[in-house]
Length: 565
View 1 (cartoon, helix red, strand yellow):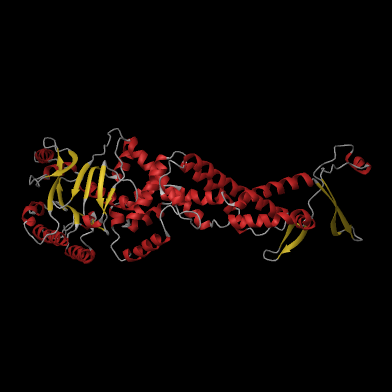
View 2 (spheres, one colour; view 1 turned 90 degrees about the vertical axis):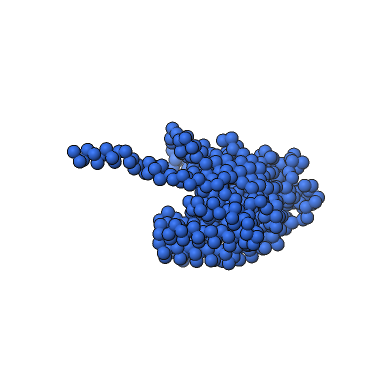
């Protein structure tokens, strides 16, 4: 994007929203979504993803995830910026340096500095403006060299803000004034002769400047000094700053303050007056960068830098990452190839650092379209069902946040919201009150969900008898498919999956169903974590589950035989 194509902006550019209107619209959307079920955050373990991206601003990343942003302009704006950080080397470094310089000035309260009235404040003002000059020149130099590489609207706007100031007619003038001021003070004032008036008790009662000199004054010992110090070198630290003692009313303690600085500044008015106005103008220009804008830019930079690091980490492990092609919500599609779960990816990396047996990340494909938009997933325990549906949810959130997604290729429609239902392990088992609670939860979801929503269910409807579970789950699936929901249901209710063909013959269903199976090695029972099309297998895995928990039937037989002898 060319510099001239960006309209003049007010304040430092926002790297998350292309306009204030877009920000306001998403804020309003967030207010509406507060009334929706928020358990998708916990069920998809999005806190872990946010922590990987931005350990120091995790809550800010979570705020973006909670938006479930459905604005194509915003997601494109962010993804374009991410690609600039990926492709333009040293971009993050120079922006970080500028932010750090300005943050240091803010820490020293230079944003609150007004017109200088003493040399201390004058020096603070000079340092603030020198930092401002340094930031502008850093950004100008980088943009001059890399402008052809920068493609995003957001990064172009950021540099344009600094370019506008670099090209301002006052900028060069103020640079010269700062330089002249420093040279004048440095060359014209090396020492000041001060006359101090004393009272009868030799207590100083007033003081005034007698003369200025461009040469430093060298203290020379008198005859009395030589006698007192026995000819030793005259100590240079005898002369002290003129100070005034007063009582701090708040704490009741004596304080010492330097009174000479302000008096000297006022008496050198003929030297300082011509510069104060220029410094004041420079400070007002500098202070247009509000601390709030600066801090926003700081965490936004961390967000993109963290996203880049996550991309590079995945690629370093041989796993694909790509920019998603976003489709209109009305298409209700998703075509994802080589998908994997970022939560499991992170856990496997930590595991592999501590254990000899290595965990590998397995990728899978999923395709939501007119042929099938609702999937029933069955298969062995720990076969990858939960990981798979979580991966789908994370992919959807990352895509709509404006980030790259963990897969080889991805075409995906926007959703208006993500609904999840993941009963906790302690909530499973036959329990009439729990079953009633589940039905109430699904009632709230069914009242809100639309044909543009995504629903992820994991082992839902397990709290009553097997037949009742099957009947209730089948009815729920039918309801959601009538609405036209895009969804996935991981379950051990094999009869529900077996009914997909029967349900598809119902013309009232807007979303067609398909059965998926988490495959295992048939000869060994080993999980291979591949999710493929297929009908559920009714082969019992009770013996396998017993073995997992250490129950060995043959060993029990032997123990009983021995005990009966």
